[in-house]
Image: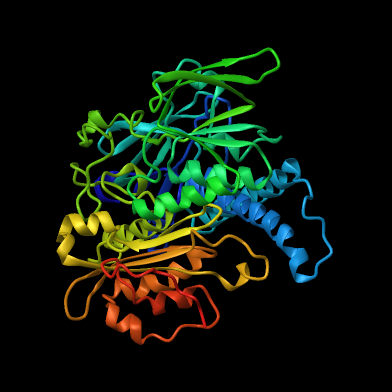
Length: 489
């Protein structure tokens, strides 16, 4: 053991990236330890090993999204000959129990995988003593010191509470709490217009709950804004209410446990109030860097975001300390990127690899009621990089076949391909709004990662009859002025 340290690698943070890094290093025969501790939310919610994605993110979100889609399928079923009740009530407790049991099985699975690889698991909250030593305390108050040659920080982030809203922490919840509620949240106000906000508001509406989204400015900041507005248009036309250009002032609780909300409506210039059963904050996330004692060892943070500054090799300002995932500045806050970055880092440290993580053209999907999948640049970002005359945008509205018999509204089903102007027109970004968007975009992501061009896409024969097929049929440009509608066969 170099330098007499106990472990070859210590990972702080047991989320997706940290677990992937620890397990990969252990597979190289290294002595590895992982520290993970969940500080309960202000409402007292905590969970097991696996991080945000497993416990309060991707996994429960997708399962509850699926539950809401099934409610929509019940409404459609009688059009296809099924004698079912389209207005069947949703049982929150039954769904939540099933989702939470699945999450607990994943927690257990991660524990078993660490044991199988002889990775030492410390359920403690660690902070630096020096650049090779981390100290933590057990629940019983016993001090534990762990030393390692290499240390990887992968502590992720937690939801942000507004500092200037009276009653925000006392009476509000976040996504850290929503997925572990034992009973339905009832009439809900979701504050924020992030993908977390819109996804949660979408499935709550799908369960038949009275749901409102409060937006300060634009929806889905950082995503293509034409697509983002189509997402909210669809949600609004299917029951989700929106308070636009509004900011929260205070929360107060009545004796019956309901919440009175006061906000400022900037559009009309006055204060307004409403009463809700639940208020959920979805106004961004805070990196978990504050309790690591990073200043003790000289790890440099971004002055504004307080995220860790890293190089292309995930190295921090301290030679043997690395950081991956949501805790790092300028990286996508996505589970798959953290997992791949963690694996590649372990291979570079212990497997004689030189391969770096490539953060370009990473596909993602927003699981709103009408799903939005994308890979590459937004139209705004492409225009910023190449100028308006440097890009060509192909687009079309389309109607999914499954919407026809049920006569479902397809006015927001839309595809957009942003290309670099030139002979072959390399695809800079692909955006898809419609059913199964994640599955559609995942397939096209490989081609775009490999430098696919518009001319190659036009030569691709689609799978008929699918919504994905419509991507291969795009030919109308935004410059043409023609109605951009694909009519299928």
